[in-house]
Image (cartoon, rainbow, N blue to C red):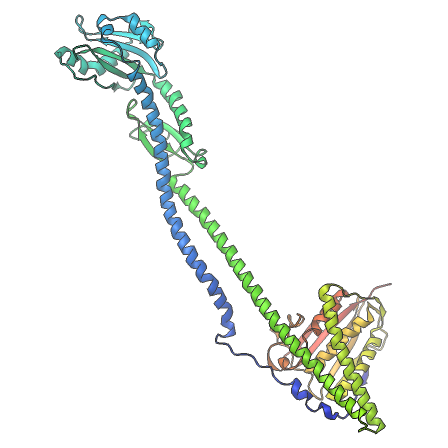
Length: 559
């Protein structure tokens, strides 16, 4: 272990240096406590977003209600179109094919009637029929198949259903009542097994001569025509409803038990108005009701709104953080310029004073001349180191900093660097203790000038914060992987919450005596970069009032 304890009387020009270095910078007072400022920023972001989300939720809730009404309206329009299609299909037959001359009925001209029915549209028709109320006999029924071919006899159920449906008009014919206009088509569904549609036919005097009609082919209507209309009218609905839409005929009282394999629908029901009047067209979406569809839309819109709000909040937070960072960097750079100006001015002033004393011949003693010369040399080294830090920082920022690696004995680097600090140690009244093992240390694989720069910055940092008359300790050690170089002071220490940030560029500890010392704010940032560029590490251990120790590790490599 070696010990260096240089001492020298303080030069006259140094009298005000420590007072200037210890001058507190002070903090600007603010109208709002610093702890509240982040919350103010959060409130500035959260309040508008909360209002926006509230309005959006209110709008989405209304949209949900409107969506339910709109979807039900769409389903009703769709169901009405299908039902109207069925009605129009049979009204067209009633207005066309069922208009026959009264003379054919009076004469019971089966050939003419058959030919007429054969020319009509037979889709949805199982039989054609003609009734004659002329005397005698009181009533005669001619029956034809869908193709218009006469049939010799009518099935009893069919004949009974036709006669029951036409009975009121037979009574009118028997009473000899005259009508001013042809009556509309009549639907007879007294027997659900045989549904008939017929038109009363008037003779020239306005009396009912008979009726021409058809028997509805219900199987065709259920299995072919209605499904075709259901498919054709889907174009009236939004595409997203096509896959879940389900439409079917069922009893109007809803007693049909889950014909489609599910619970009763929550969709809409449209009664069949012209034929099949005991049935209704039920339209729904078994997998999703209008309420569920609207709720799903609400949740989707809510998710998108929250996502957009989150992105907006993140963007605002990022912008505020960037603005705060830019403001902080600007303030730190301003402080950096101020501190560097002071750091330059102090040694330059000292060099100027000592130079004037020597140049003016006012100092003639050889010992004083040597002392002042050493002081000028020491301050020059200090200036050189400050300029070197600024230039190295510029190279580091631009990625142009390069190193020349070789085997380095850190003992030699420590001795050479400490020699350059001897005058400053004397002036500050500090002792420097070097602790190193007796056995030789393995060489580190490093750039010697870079190691010297790191040690210089650590010593300069220790000088700023060491107490007058105190001690700075430089330690050397190592293991199988690295050589350890540490610098310890007995200064005020660094608060735990700030120890991770002291290696940031321009950052200076902002509380207590630590903040009072001047500095460029680049030294420790350069230390960290240099050590990590050598694949080493730098750590700090510090306690309030007990001093600070910086430990660097320099890897050992074979050439």
